[in-house]
Amino acid sequence: MGKKSITKRWLINNLGIVFLIMLVIETIFIYVIHNYFYSSARQYLTSKLNSVTSVLSLYAEDTTINFSSELCDMLENFSDKDKMELMAVDSKGRISHTSSGFTPESSVYIPDYEEAMKSDSNFGYYTGKQENGEKIMAVSFSIESFNTDYDAIRAAISLEEVDDAILGYITILTLICLAILGLLAFTGFYFIGQIVQPVQQISKTAGKFAKGDFSVRIKNSSDDEIGELCTAINHMADELSNADAMKNEFISSVSHELRTPLTAIRGWAETISLETDATIIRKGIRVISNETERLSQMVEELLDFSRMQSGHFSLQLDTMDILAELGEAVLIYAERARIEDVTMTYEEPEMLPFVYGDRNRLRQVFINIIDNAIKYSNKGGNVHIVAGETPSGDIMVTVEDSGCGISKFDMPRIKTKFYKANHTKKGSGIGLAVADEIIAQHGGTLTLESEEGKGTKVIITIPQQREDK
Image (tube, rainbow, N blue to C red):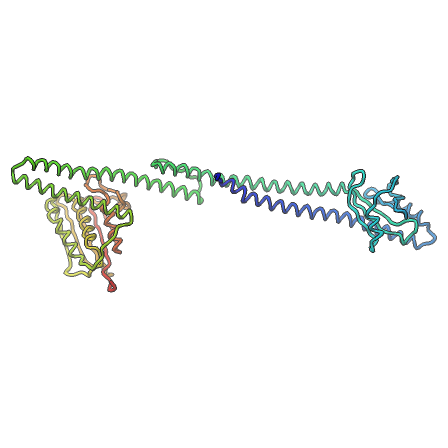
């Protein structure tokens, strides 16, 4: 099937309908104006004949007057002879006298006369063309009862001026309709151009987006819905460009993060294979174990992120003690904090309400948050961890560090996938996004409060277990 453009559809659906409506209106107008003028002409002829026959009836009643002589005199002195022709039809059905003085040499077909002679109203009407091609309207009135020599009085008028007047009105209406159609076409094409051009530009730009070119932008010069669409697409391009840049940076960062432990594992594996010193061998095995754990954690983050993207990220929910999982995470990083020369303190109540959650996933969140707190703290810094209960009864865990903090520019996107505010620190940039998703699936919130150069505070809230669980 051929492509239907917006312009073509508008021409068919809108301008075509308007054209049909105007065509119907003009047809009705032609019918009305034609009937009006012809009816007026007929009424005019009829009224003149009525006046004439009224006088003739008086002549017929007066026996002292010669009817034929008076009829001829009336025709000769007819006052409206410049507008119409008045004729007398004799008893043989022939026109014997006319107001113009010209009498047809032969018999003429007079259908209005024949109708008048048969009609009870004594009137007969005819509209048509004569033998010379002239279009006329004629009205006959039977005067057979007035005089035996004459059957009817006939009045005829040329319709040339009437038809010219009708044609003039039709021409004016046609020009008005054409002007309206022209105006509609002009404004329509202009309006459609205002839509089609941006749509074509959007289509071309979208094609470039599909090929991975996010540098182009749509020129926007309107503040209507089309302008809003252009703005939205430009904003989408900005986001796609940022996402693409973060993705590339993520790939580069992950490649680097994977290369570092792999290099360490490979180097120490080669060293151990040639080394006989037990101390060095133990040190090498410890390094290999730590780097393997680091690789495992990174791979797990990538798998979790993949599950999130595909919608297969699920939780194994059960009643659990959140303090046990938080305490284990703190214990895991106690030695790491000591090695990094970071003071880590932990405050916990004796008891907190149980939560309905996935213990492994929540422990993963705590590990990620504590790991970031230590990672972004300088030597001699502090990491303070507090567990408690909010006034509304939710479980709240806060992890606060005295590290480098997060800038106001980075704060809105800090939980975005692939985004890394600090490129000097190790990490894939998806750990916080995964943690935020885990907490959200538990019905809780993960928020950050930070000031650049003064540290960061992460606040985790999780609803306690309801009685119906």
